[in-house]
Length: 159
Image (cartoon, rainbow, N blue to C red; front, side, top):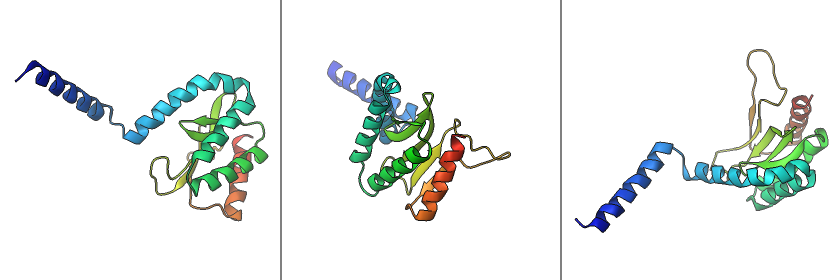
């Protein structure tokens, strides 16, 4: 075996080992890279609400249907019911923050090839109810009833 063959085999084994060792899918790896880019832009956006909203609307515009329509409507509902939350992106997803901490976010079906879209709430959201409560909600469509429930959740999350 030549030195070149040994080197290419070693490189292939190392790359395969990294892939196996980190346990991340290609989609997860892409989301992490996207988040790294967001962190660089976050300082600007944290000082300028318009910059954060601009980035969020760009992400929504890039989404395929029906994610785009759902994210657009969620943006309207969230900004109307919690105007003090700052729009921004978080791991490539539309998100809304208070004091720099994510309160809620939208994960479209296409993001990780999921069965349904998700409206998620982080621990900054004040949704506590007893010993156990939901923090993630599956969305298949936005009906009037679903929109009303979302408005109540968002108001409670920032109360």
